[in-house]
Amino acid sequence: MTVGEELQSQYQETKVSEIPVVELKSSASGDAVAHEAIEALKVAGVCIVRNLLSQSIVDKVRQELQPYEQEGTSFEGK
Image 1 (cartoon, rainbow, N blue to C red):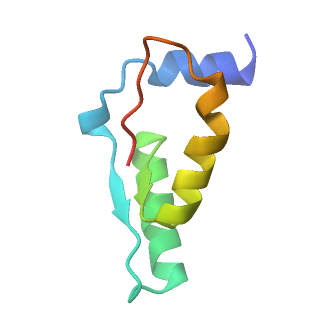
Image 2: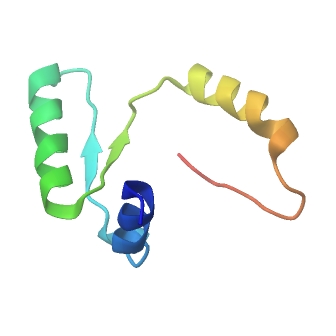
Image 3: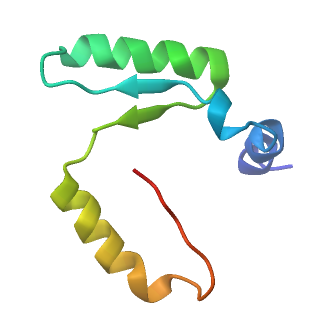
Protein backbone atom coordinates (compact mmCIF):
# COMPACT_ATOMS: atom_id res chain seq x y z
CA MET A 1 0.00 0.00 0.00
CA THR A 2 1.39 3.42 -0.94
CA VAL A 3 1.57 6.27 1.57
CA GLY A 4 -1.22 8.05 -0.29
CA GLU A 5 -3.46 5.00 -0.16
CA GLU A 6 -2.71 4.54 3.53
CA LEU A 7 -3.60 8.15 4.31
CA GLN A 8 -6.74 7.95 2.21
CA SER A 9 -7.95 4.84 4.01
CA GLN A 10 -7.09 6.36 7.38
CA TYR A 11 -9.04 9.58 6.80
CA GLN A 12 -11.81 8.55 4.42
CA GLU A 13 -14.20 8.19 7.35
CA THR A 14 -13.50 11.73 8.61
CA LYS A 15 -16.60 13.87 8.44
CA VAL A 16 -16.25 17.48 7.37
CA SER A 17 -17.82 18.60 10.64
CA GLU A 18 -14.95 16.89 12.51
CA ILE A 19 -12.17 18.70 10.64
CA PRO A 20 -10.54 21.45 12.73
CA VAL A 21 -10.75 24.96 11.27
CA VAL A 22 -7.98 27.55 11.61
CA GLU A 23 -9.01 31.13 10.87
CA LEU A 24 -6.33 33.24 9.20
CA LYS A 25 -6.87 36.74 10.53
CA SER A 26 -4.91 39.76 9.39
CA SER A 27 -4.07 40.57 13.01
CA ALA A 28 -2.63 37.12 13.76
CA SER A 29 1.09 36.47 13.42
CA GLY A 30 2.18 33.88 10.88
CA ASP A 31 3.84 31.88 13.64
CA ALA A 32 0.62 31.73 15.69
CA VAL A 33 -1.42 30.53 12.70
CA ALA A 34 1.23 27.97 11.77
CA HIS A 35 1.36 26.68 15.34
CA GLU A 36 -2.44 26.34 15.46
CA ALA A 37 -2.50 24.52 12.11
CA ILE A 38 0.31 22.17 13.17
CA GLU A 39 -1.51 21.30 16.38
CA ALA A 40 -4.70 20.61 14.42
CA LEU A 41 -2.75 18.39 12.02
CA LYS A 42 -1.23 16.45 14.92
CA VAL A 43 -4.67 15.78 16.38
CA ALA A 44 -6.79 15.20 13.28
CA GLY A 45 -4.31 14.70 10.45
CA VAL A 46 -6.08 17.40 8.47
CA CYS A 47 -7.28 20.97 8.93
CA ILE A 48 -8.99 23.74 7.04
CA VAL A 49 -7.26 27.12 6.94
CA ARG A 50 -9.89 29.73 6.19
CA ASN A 51 -8.97 32.94 4.37
CA LEU A 52 -5.57 31.59 3.33
CA LEU A 53 -6.15 32.77 -0.24
CA SER A 54 -7.73 36.01 -1.40
CA GLN A 55 -11.11 35.85 -3.11
CA SER A 56 -9.51 36.92 -6.40
CA ILE A 57 -7.14 33.92 -6.30
CA VAL A 58 -10.02 31.55 -5.44
CA ASP A 59 -12.03 32.96 -8.36
CA LYS A 60 -9.04 32.52 -10.71
CA VAL A 61 -8.51 28.88 -9.62
CA ARG A 62 -12.22 28.12 -10.07
CA GLN A 63 -12.14 29.71 -13.52
CA GLU A 64 -9.11 27.64 -14.52
CA LEU A 65 -10.63 24.39 -13.20
CA GLN A 66 -14.05 24.97 -14.77
CA PRO A 67 -13.22 23.16 -18.05
CA TYR A 68 -12.36 20.03 -16.04
CA GLU A 69 -15.50 20.01 -13.92
CA GLN A 70 -17.64 16.99 -14.59
CA GLU A 71 -21.20 17.66 -15.61
CA GLY A 72 -23.65 16.95 -12.82
CA THR A 73 -21.17 17.57 -10.02
CA SER A 74 -20.74 20.58 -7.82
CA PHE A 75 -18.31 21.97 -5.31
CA GLU A 76 -19.25 24.64 -2.84
CA GLY A 77 -15.91 25.31 -1.20
CA LYS A 78 -15.21 28.49 0.68
